[in-house]
Amino acid sequence: GGAVAGQTYFLSSSATLVHANIADGDWSAWLDWLPYAIVTGAISCALLNAVLMNKGLAEFEAIFFVPMFAGSAIVAACVSAVVVLRETTKLPYWRMAVYWAGVSLVVCGLGILAWEARQASASPSREISGDDEETASVTSSTSTESLRQDAEAASKTGV
Image 1: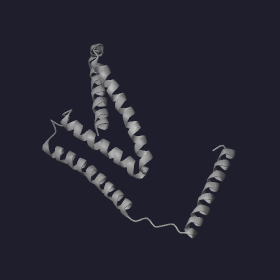
Image 2: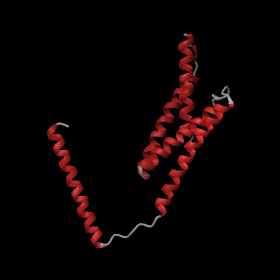
Image 3: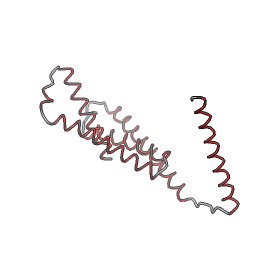
Image 4: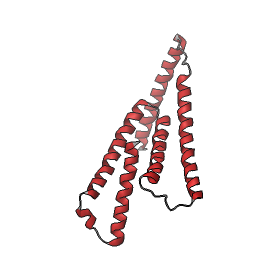
C-alpha cells in the first residue's frame, strides 16, 4: 500500500503546486529542491507500481489481481486524502459518512473477492485420467490450430 499511497500523495502534491503556480504566476517554488523531489517520488512510485503489477500478474490470475490492486489503490488514496492531506476537513458530517460508506463498500468488495479466491483455491482439483488427458491434448491442439488459422486469416485481410 505504501507505493500506491505514495504515488497518490506525490501526484496530488505536484498537481497542487503546479495549480498554485499557474494561478499566481509565481514559479519561484521551483528554485528549491523540494518540488523536484516530489515529482521524482511520483515517478518512482509509478515505476514501483508497474513492477508490482507485473509480478502480481505473473503469480495470480488477472481477474483476481487487477481488481485487488486497483481496489487497494482506491482505499489507500482515500485514507491518504483524509489522514495525510486532510482534504476532507471542511466536509459536513453527512458527506464524511457517505465518503466512508463508499470506502467501506470497496473494502467489502475486496473482502468478497479475496474470500471467493480462497474458496476456489481450497476446492479439490480432480485428477486427469488417461481419457481426459487425451481429450485435453486434442482440445488444446485444436484451439492452437484454430488460433493460428485466425491469425493467418487476419494478416491476409489486413485486420
